[in-house]
Amino acid sequence: MNKWILSLIMGSLLLASCGNKEATLDTERLNAYFDALDGRYMGTVVINKGGRTVFERSLGYADVEAGVKADASSKYMVGSISKVFTSSMVMMAAEEGLLSLDDNLEKYFPGANIPNAATITLDDLLYHRSGLTDIFEGEGDYLQWYTSLQSREQQLQRIAAEPADTVPGAVQKYCNAGYVLMSYILEDVYGMSYADLLQQKIASPLGLNQTAFADRIEVEKGECRSYAYKGGWDLQPETDPSVPMGAGSVMSTPADLVKFGDALFHGTLGSSVLDSMERIAGSLGRGLFPFVYYDKKGFGHTGGIDGFQSVMCHFDDGDVTLALCSNGSDLNQNDILIVLLSAMYDHEYDIPSFANTTVDASLLEQYAGTYYCEALKMTLNITTDGKTLTGQVVGQTAFPLEAASDTRFECARGGIVIELSDAGLTLLQAGYSFLFVKQ
Image (cartoon, rainbow, N blue to C red; front, side, top):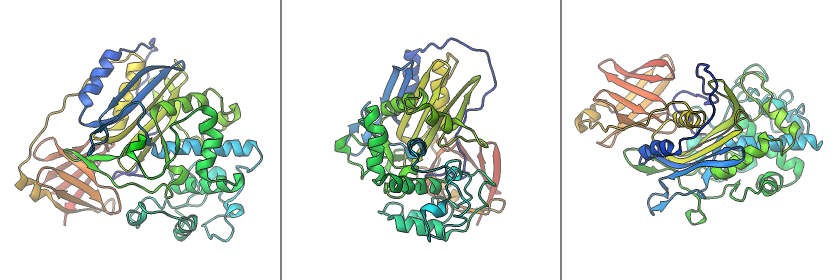
């Protein structure tokens, strides 16, 4: 859903191998870490070990404007973690003989004119190798309709209208549209709405009482609004749940996500369901990412929608399942996840301190403008409110930039660094460097 400048899938934490350590959890230090994040991070984290909760912490507000604080029962949009629920139900449907992973799209959407529908299989959708263009990305008109109710017909027309990126099976490229299509297929084979299906097949049997297909956010029901950090918390628009469907419209709590993760990874939903989802093709499983932390290997998924971020993962070593959900953050979720795993596996981690750098408003005004990168064929708009900078690529979500110096600005959440000079703007992300020239 939300994308920063470069499309990065946070599927794994790649660190050098080291020796095993007995997992011990220093909750006092971990609480001190989250104390340091207060004011820059809002959300809830839960860690289970051996089926028992060993750490739980909430920060910030479910509703900043009304002063409603978040707690362990606060519900968050979990974004693409929804795909784990969707994939689980697809595997159940396959076990029940309601569909086959070898079925092609033409069987379920005859006459919809989806590119390559006769050769794209359901397995291609699950593995993100359909070759379809993702209607939620790029420089299309997504931002013009994502907050409004969308019918199945409208979404199918959008998917059909975009030419395929590649032939099916040729390239593995993350694609939300594939899981939207899987949502519709599940509704058809079971003869019920995705919302009812989620309750009947997963939430009710597992006792996930705070998990459901989302509706419009209602704070009085314990649901969180989402925010972007721009020196303060800026309320974000809500994606209508009809837009991402089973690709991103599940609402839950970290406690429920941990319970779901424990059930999935302990085979409660069926050993064949888990085996099928963990089977790697390319770099992904069916609805799961591999996670690597030192010598520990696990599976899970991350999520992001509007101002929400989330992660749920399980490591067999120590039987550790953790989930964190945020409705506002100025930090990189991957960094927080590494700290949580470091705490669980008795590795060192730092408690951050944040220094505020003030840049003169006249200098910020000089930086504001339109920048173009020839290598990426990308336009980046930089704006200012007189106190800070905001960046936005055409067709993508705006991101806040915090001053580290008079010439260096950072978006910790996206792992983005921008350095300004007479030559223009240099964008640094994930080890890459790109020059943008001011227009």
